[in-house]
Structures are given as C-alpha cells and as structure tokens.
Image 1 (cartoon, rainbow, N blue to C red):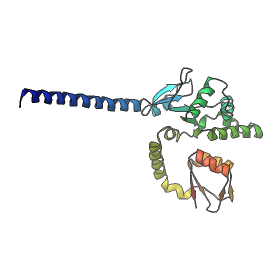
Image 2 (cartoon, rainbow, N blue to C red):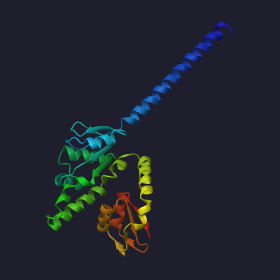
Image 3 (cartoon, rainbow, N blue to C red):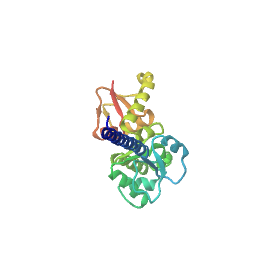
Image 4 (cartoon, rainbow, N blue to C red):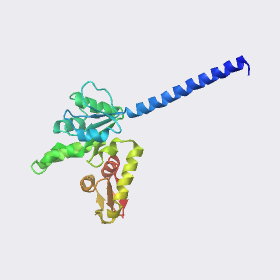
Length: 231
C-alpha cells in the first residue's frame, strides 16, 4: 500500500471517528434533554414526598414569579380564592396567570383532589354555597385541569405510555374485586352521581347495561379518563 493510500485511509478513519463521537454526544444530549423535563409545584411550602416521587422523571422546581414555562404543573392545594379565579379564567395575580398560561400552551396541569380546601366545610357550609364551589371544581376539569387523587396524580403527570402501564398494573391488581364493585343501576346517570362514585371507587365506573349517561356526565368521564363498564 503506497503512502497516498495510507493517508487516505487515515483521513477516512479520523473522519469516521469524529462522526461517531458527534453522534454519541448527540445521543447523550438527547438523553439529558429528556431527563430535564421540568415539573413545577405551585406552592411555597416544601413538599418532599411529592418531590421524591417526581424526581425520577422530572427536574422539580417550586413556583416563583420568574418562571415562564414547564412541562407539568402540579397544584397541591387550592384555596377558595384560587378555585374561583381559575374556574372563571380570571388572571388576578401571578399564580393564576402562570396556571392559565400553562393551560393555553397545552401543558399538563394536575390538581390534587385532597387539596380542594372547600371540601373540609361540607358539613357546615350552606348548601348553595358549597354547590357553587363544587361547580367551580367541575369547571377546572372542563378547562383542562386534571383533578387526580393521591393514588393517581403521578400517573397523570407521566407520559401517556407510562400512565397506561401504571393503569394496567392497577387494573390487574384490582381484577379480583371487580365482581364486587358497586354497580350504578339508575335509568339516568347524572354528572353528580358520577362525581360521587369517583370519590369512592376511583377511575372505573360500572353501570347497568340499560342506563343512560347524560352528556355532562359523559364529559366528566372523558376529562377524568374514567373507564365505563356495563353489566
């Protein structure tokens, strides 16, 4: 092999090595970027339990007024002021503005069901006032805020495939008790009945095969990603 051929082979080898190096760096960069998805907790109070559950999947930050974007926004607690403002699309302050902007951008916004503070006063509140706040909570779902309970909020935060896998595990583990699950046998299933059932039974509802689901109830089932089974 002459010197020219050796030089050509060396150049090819060097170029190949450089291309492979850049491809590896690109792959590593994509992995880092994927790991850098950001979850924001809309609270000033430290919440290590939520943090620890999110950290394998997201970079976790607490909300402050300098933030402009995130991949997932979690609202651990909703006072009656925040509830009323969000339900009516009112940007009364930085918090509300950030939540509404995330919704407009199509980001995932998850509210913890246990954090709906008005529900603590169900036994003492005037019926119509409590009903009004209940309707506000329903509006949150309609405008894109997913209300999830303690068992399901993480699945709601994750990508669709991960959430589906977690739901499959949940359904598999609960398969043995589905035969004993409550069956709604009313002729007409309303939104209010579906909401009550969800608090007791989670993400699946079983109804009589002849029952009719009202349009509002169907919207609520779709927004909460509840599965409907007829028996």
